[in-house]
Amino acid sequence: MGHQQVIVKDLGRIAYADALEVQRDLLGSLVDLKKQNRPKLVSDRVVPQHYFLFCEHDPVITLGRTGSEQNLLVNAAQLDKEEISFYRTNRGGDITFHGPGQIVGYPIFDLEYFFTDVHKYVRYIEEGVIRTLLTFNILGKRVEGYTGVWLEATDNRPERKICAIGIHLSRWISMHGFAFNVNTDLRFFDKIIPCGISDDSREVTSLAKELGHDVDLKEVKKILLDHYAQLFEFDYFIE
Image 1 (cartoon, rainbow, N blue to C red):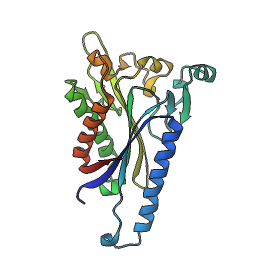
Image 2: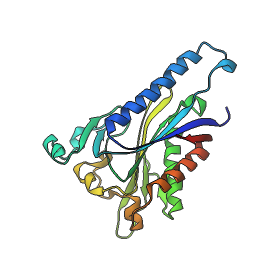
Image 3: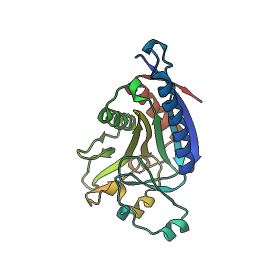
Image 4: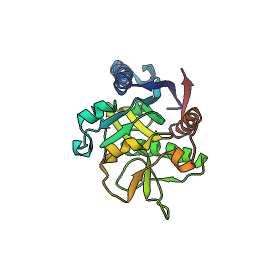
């Protein structure tokens, strides 16, 4: 179908509920366009503009549709005291944390204009992060049975997760996405069993922790975006 057009919006630091509303609005517009296009000949259909949202969230713990609340290790009073929100969501996956210093990416794509393969879509999201890590001389990997991006165990550190992924599709239109720990305060993850994985041989990490210093988020977003444009074969425009 040729290169698709993707509008990139950086929402900055934003409450989870507000970002969710933006996603739903954009997804709804693509669903409406799809309905309008259905009766038309292929040559007469309006090709959609897809969206890629970046943001940082105020501290929030989210629980995916297949997750267990038992993986939340603190109660509501403790969350309120530390000003951490909690949301149940319709994305895949279990429990995770979002907060400042973390790059969250929400692709709102009509996958019928790319490919209709959920497994391939998730692998491409992982691949964009893996290629970005290579820019910083860090070797990311996949772990069989889990989504997300991981780093290999070393002599003094276990296998560790640096990026979580949870998606939702409606009429082949995507929402939710990935959370890449860049300068994230990892102490927040002590309040949950991240992704429901209680294995002591694994932990959570960040790009800053691996490098020993903070990283420019704008730089990382640009690297991510260029890799995704190459993987998904789209042209992008930043609003």
